[in-house]
Length: 153
Image 1 (tube, rainbow, N blue to C red):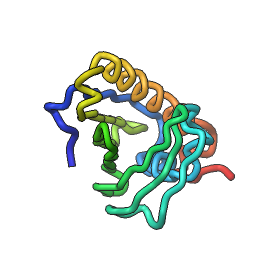
Image 2 (cartoon, rainbow, N blue to C red):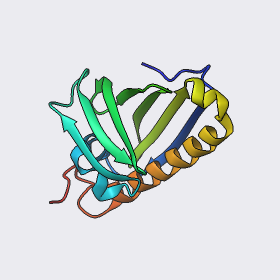
Image 3 (cartoon, rainbow, N blue to C red):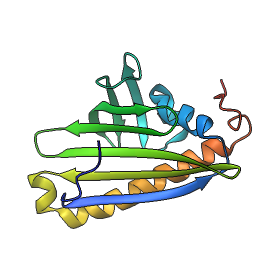
């Protein structure tokens, strides 16, 4: 699954992280622990196994969100979607080993009537959100203990 290139709001960001691809994968895919490293998430819970078709519930900036896993290719790619009354979203993450770390790329698109009406606001929000999430992921992954791929207790 890829983002909707024709959506009114879409963004792609990338960042080099000095950690193994497996370590970064472990942090990002441990949805139940998102709130421990991502300040934008106050609560998150995966319903079942981390496999395509599974859903997860999370709260970000007072918005309650339900997402569905689509692609799960450890440790190279993961994507999920979100559908609601007013909008749909596609979020894709890729991980490419490079030197002593990993190049992490994240892309997301927002579509729907409310996004078309307020596309400049959604675009600004999306750009900032992806940048902040990448920076939070980098900080968590480069902490002592994450380089091995094992999350601290």
